[in-house]
Length: 319
Length: 251
Image 1 (cartoon, rainbow over the protein chains, first blue to last red):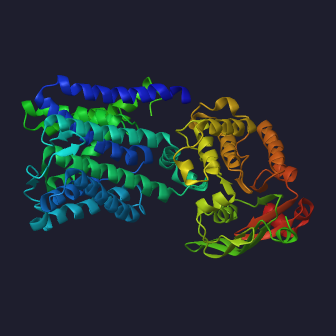
Image 2: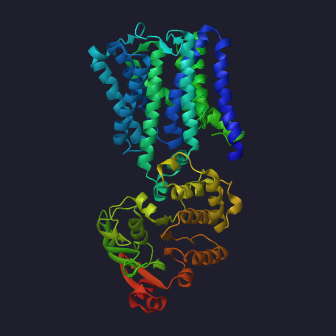
Image 3: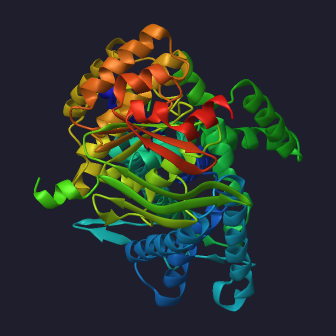
């Protein structure tokens, strides 16, 4: 296994380098789109830790994404905090929420887990609408005017500058990809895969599946929260639509499309789907049918996703 | 080991019972296993053997009664803690990680034993782990198969892999549930030799249907029927026991 360490790290580093280089060659429209894709891919990367590596399918991740988004957006709006502090609050909010939700939902598994996480997420979504006076949920709110520039040493970063936004997105994706790569190759990752493959056997080998599942759910929730938070910053917008079920389904679809249980699958899935939607919506208003058709074909022909298929055919050492 | 440790059984159950719906799978079982023995547990299908050992390893919660391991009450202890204490169970129907390699299967077990401090969960010496896995696989004659997917192995090899995983945990009490089922005569002979070698350092509780294996390995046999322990003793005593004869041969 160790002889493959170098290509694995090199491939991931090369990918980050390509994404970093992309910003100087692509036109402004794609510039913004790629920045968004990177944050959403980081979100799916966090989701994939749970689905792909631990075998838990959640339909409630939008609540963690939105917890990060509101945890960042509300302090920016009401307290006038700096963006870094607000992002930290967003991540903290998603950690608290995922710990509490995990303690309750992880008593279930399989389809029950899917449904229970969906219910919690619906409660969260409806709460953002119910407390509309405070959250401004139904209309959403914009953050422009509340994003003060960040000064690090002699350099000032204006958070409204597209280049700063792109690199913030890149850093978020790079950090989440690195975390995911490290985690799945660590002793913890080995136990997570064992739980996915056979939970009963893993328990009788002396591991506490609940503790591991809670740990990965909190990590996954924190990553989702970070992404929701950064997404709010780079788009200057916070709204309840990000807490709705669609944003729980997206990371599931991106992960299934790209390859569950592969570190690179979520980016490939998020990019492929976003661009398919982008292209399809130019030709037809019912572009979701095109997306749905593409998904049906992919799931039938490539059940392990794009990167999963590549791994099976050509590169069994891919993590 | 002091005199007190010698008096305390490695494993003891007191009036242990399990009821599924209205069916009494195990009724008031008082059972003792001493340190260092190879104990055979026999009985007809449905006698409650697997239910009894499942309560011992923690897969099934007893309806009533107590379980003591080295004198300590573990009746309410979680299964994963019991495995860490040294009670290791191998499944009747082989239950390896089918989609993972043979090497990875054993690595999961070895890792559990060597992972002691919190830090080990984050960084573990993978080189040392790999060499321990190699050693464990060599013990059961699977050394050349490390790269194969566990699910692609023939049945007999999966059983051996299951045993490798159990041994990698260095158990104090190894519970084997029909380990020779489906093995060839030669594989059974090799397995018996191997078990005798293992028994030097480990207590073994063996559920087995093959009487040749039982007589070959155990000096004490426990017989169950319809949820009760009906006899216990040396092979000669068990053979002479009227109730055992009735159960096995009919009235």
